[in-house]
View 1: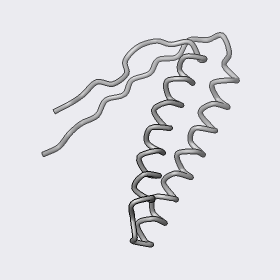
View 2: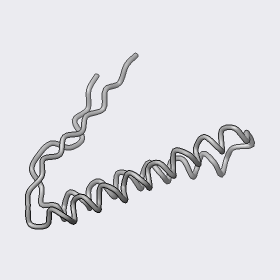
View 3: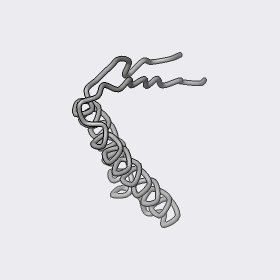
Length: 82
């Protein structure tokens, strides 16, 4: 099963907003799991994932801001394997 989340052309400003919100959802997911976890290894793994997401977002924003005024294509699909 595939779910198409994003497909289209966007201004860099809109692309930043969309990707930022998506990454924040993923970060909140990990933060909630950390709050409910007693497993130290799980917490450390999730903290690493959060840091990587934050780093990727920072780099994405920097690249998009350098392209001000241009349009970018975004395509995001989730594939669910059973």
